[in-house]
Length: 208
Image (tube, rainbow, N blue to C red; front, side, top):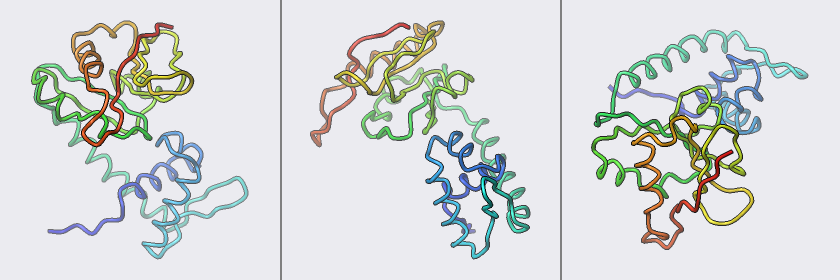
């Protein structure tokens, strides 16, 4: 059976905006801009041919169609989340890695890490931010910023100063074997891949 579904990102934008009744709060949850959420919802409405929200001055209200659509969409996401949580990657130890939304996953070649570290089951949450790390949803985070987070070990992924990509882990678990393995593997990656693009290379740690 072929399921005819709207784009997943549009559904996620609608579901988050409907729960919060706010594009701004939905954007914070999804690590995108409010404008991006609004565009996704508008595209979904155009695809479905129905209006899902009433956009009033500083207020977002679900239409009758939106109210009818939300429970089924939310339940579908819950089923997917439950099914996913029951899966466990191969490996005796599970490492949950969060990555900020603008990071190109191809830079990491995670398949190579999985193939050379069979003892670690690597799971990736993308996009993710410091909020997910604080809440324990991820064990390790590649974050975009200045790398100053009290209580966390921060290792710069790319060279330079100012804004950059940082590998962030809680100080209490930063030296766990699986995190040490990922940090060492990231540090050992060649400076450039076959296409000539820069690969991440840890250039030192910052403990704040």
